[in-house]
Image 1 (spheres, helix red, strand yellow):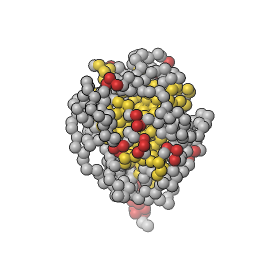
Image 2 (cartoon, rainbow, N blue to C red):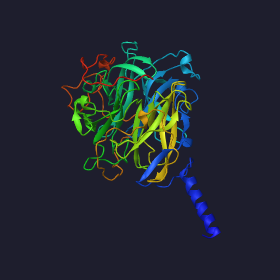
Image 3 (tube, rainbow, N blue to C red):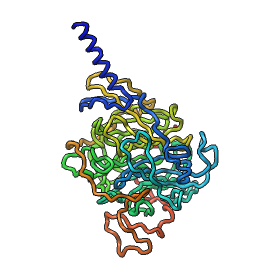
Length: 483
């Protein structure tokens, strides 16, 4: 090779490498199907604080929210909902939020977002569901009595219905928060709103016992509003099925998998569970898909990487990790470290966004218990062709997280294509679109159809029943290992 050609070739290789590992805004080369992926730790960074004083939303001044956690998201018509767990008022957050007593405790709250073209500057709230001007409302009441019902926390949300405006929040009823990463449930269930999040009603058919393998969940609906570009199993209608990832209360259980028709999501009798070889009735049939400890998690399809992405907390080693899979059922790759609690003290709850999943940046929210804020984060993957040495991978210190998924049902996939646009009604400023006109003084005559949620009636909901719906446990979970 001539010297000039060698120089040009070397420059070409250098340019390709620079593009592939860039953490800027330039697009990466389009990946191939035969590609392995590694977290680019240098690309993991905080984008913006979303809650608290001085955040992009200044939630203390606007909504009386100085501290909140979680921040999982789902689309409601054209708007994005972001649901929070325990929510507190003044005083403003300090570096150690818990070092100062805070008033105005609400067990949960929810914000609405008009999705921007890019989240690069954060996610601006257009409003929070309020009970009075300037005050975020507690959606699901709780008794706030440790040992009876300390709090009621929404663990994930999903919208259903013809216009994607029936709002569903899965919740865990917490008997007591015992120590970091460990808590006891009185049960779990679901509440539904048809009036844009103002009023919520408990769904009796969605109740699960305290020892359920699905005490906390994450939802995936391939081809649905939250994952519109996702491929679906051959012969399946896009958006028809919801995959439900479940863990028991706390952060130390295994992850199990269920499936349900989208229009039956509030009816546990309609669920089937992966038993290692097939889908079967009854939660007792569910076997571990990923070995614990698994903390709060989320799963989204990314059309750039052509992979399903899962993120969760490994509590005992303080690691936020990521796995990839070709289908929502798996098989899931061994986990890689996205960030750690050394970089972000007491970080937890990584929730992937339901939008902006068609480029190299992976956007997710993350909480920190120290500041008790929710932040928007981003990271990126680096590619290596199949058979080539992958980029440097930081493996978790947690040995179970290094294992691939234990089982995965074979699911042949149809070609990915964007779902047909859903007819939506523009929402008034700061609110969510509604599913129906909801009467507030009368109750509909006769029971609703089996697949339809009851119409919310504010006079019927004062708290969530603390009693487990099944007096004798019918499912078992492995004993939680020590942290």
